[in-house]
Image (cartoon, rainbow, N blue to C red; front, side, top):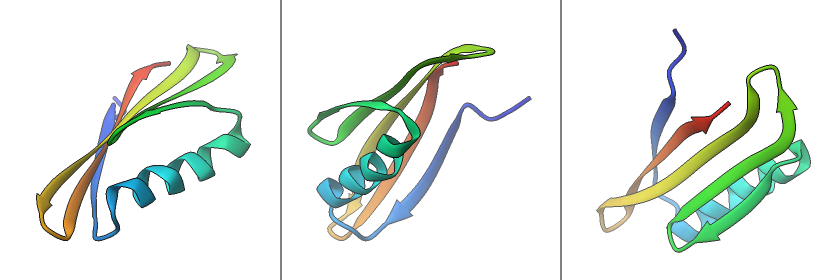
Amino acid sequence: EHKRETRFTSQCPPKEIISKIAEAARPLGFDIQKKNYKMRMENPKAGRKGNLNVATEVFQVAPSLHVVELKKAKG
């Protein structure tokens, strides 16, 4: 079975992390909704398992260290 989520750390500011992920997802056809340190990406083109929907959230664990969590919500 495939993992439905992944996490990684980053020393970049949260707004930069969110905007870089959005920048990478837009050319792939994702619709993006951002709110603070959360983002929802949805690909309106249905694949064989339906629309792909990915939730992204950034957590601060130290002043200059953040954990980025990406979860497959749908698809």
